Length: 477
Ligand SMILES: Cc1cc2nc3c(=O)[nH]c(=O)nc-3n(C[C@H](O)[C@H](O)[C@H](O)COP(=O)(O)O)c2cc1C
Image (tube, rainbow, N blue to C red; front, side, top):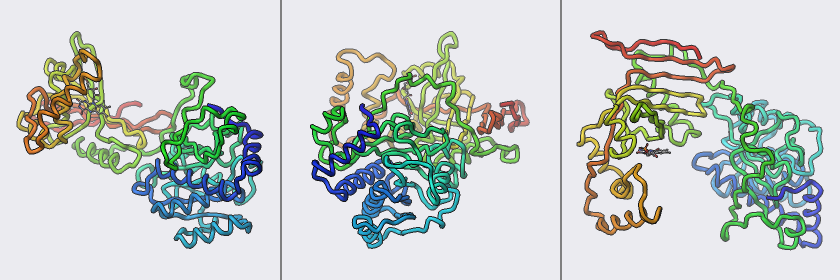
């Protein structure tokens, strides 16, 4: 994908507003709509209801104000900080529209130096775009410093705020993250690290250095002749008739994506684990940590765990399964008994589970013996599953090679079963080759990441003999 130089980006804008026939407000309206649609695609109002828009004095600020108005109409609670309002017509009108739409205009002094304490789930950075030239002046210097320390990926990496109770707001930048050079990016290396970038018209050169999770292209004003002249013909088309812009393809990397592996590291500062936090029963601690993982919006599948088993000759194998039950017997999951893991566990019940909840910087390791659940329990769980999953359990001989015409053979088998059980009133029978295992633990380790790799590790081991209960040991990190 092509990346625009600063000069070409300025030339395209000049062409659009000259021979191209666009007015400034038209470009702002389209750009702002794209930004609002992109933000809503990744951070829906249901999970991220509060958006704080930071609008700068230039046109990027105008894009931010338009986005703020659309976001308000999309159902977000919108606050706007616009420290240097411009009296020119489209800007003044936008402020009026925002007030009437119910957005809150907040004085920048009210925001404070800690962005993670700002009342926002998402911060939209519309401070400076590609026309910015440093150095930053007050109050923008303080705003950018607060964002660098307390919002987006950089702040999460250094553990600003409390990962559970006060997660850092997500940071979305319009076109060029504020304070970045349009071509060189964040030259000093300690500026903003937005989670999302919405490139307008085409990505600028600095976008190749963007390492956040979501990169969208918006504000698609290009005509075919402009695209051809500026080498932008391979930009992806808008999907269908929507205003929601297409996610931008990954930047072409000159170095291989693993070239900087030695330098990839996080500092673990999200929490601590003391002996005083550890109850006598490890399952009680597991439940507490599992509750934290469930409550964290950054953990999509807290019950996903790696199951490790042993095959012939003690050859280990591991895969992800879902925790589906936890009681005094242990950790339950469901699978095909004839699968690789199923047959391995029947032959050798020694097994291990690993949970990793990345935003909490926590790992739990469980070791024990996994045995089949009673058939009645497996059947009861099978009957509670969606019909499609029930038929899937019949359709797949999990871990066996797919014979015949590949994927199509599977789809045909599924279609056959759907035909056979078309009458929804007829229950799908329970397949005896499918069911649960419960892993009874004899050791559990709770790991909390700490700075300088001096992590907290507390291990519970089941005491033998009559005494019962668990011993607790701290291991070196
Ligand atoms: C998030 C996630 C959840 C999964 N959950 C299950 C599960 O609960 N049961 C299962 O049999 N396979 C599950 N799988 C698929 C397994 O990882 C694996 O591909 C499959 O069970 C075959 O493993 P095997 O050949 O070693 O037996 C899941 C995979 C992922 C990525």
